[in-house]
Amino acid sequence: MTVNIHTGVVEGKFPKRALRHVLEWYEIHREELIENWALCQNNEAPKPIEPLE
Image (cartoon, rainbow, N blue to C red; front, side):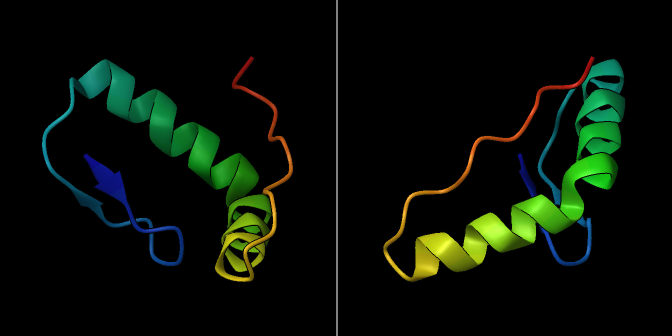
């Protein structure tokens, strides 16, 4: 499964309950994910992101 960090579009299959958790985490941390993606594109280490509580 992949989730596009810019659009939230999901590709692939995932159990419904787990998918809800992934999308909830994505919504909370979207900006951090985009920042980390930019770091990775510049060959820099991504910053840790908190797990879903």
